[in-house]
Length: 106
Image 1: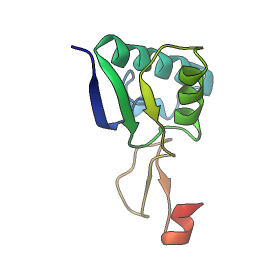
Image 2: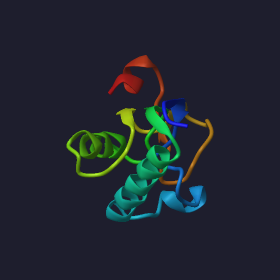
Image 3: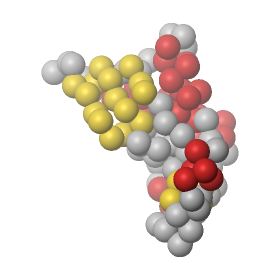
């Protein structure tokens, strides 16, 4: 069934072992994310919203590749890097820590 939408997607996390994604090279992670985007499209999704990116700008790069026709994928509202407050939930190599509103906005 086409026309599905997902309002909370971690497309940069979906195809890999979460514990190892932080160590994954950017090039390999980009290919993994492109494969994830294609999987969403093949599964009938026509739009999804990024909840957080596993690496800085990775969501934006994949969104650009989809928009330019370089890789297949649904329409994509990209997001920034995963972040939490100090002492919050940690995913090694992925989570950024920010304290206070201004730090979160950077």
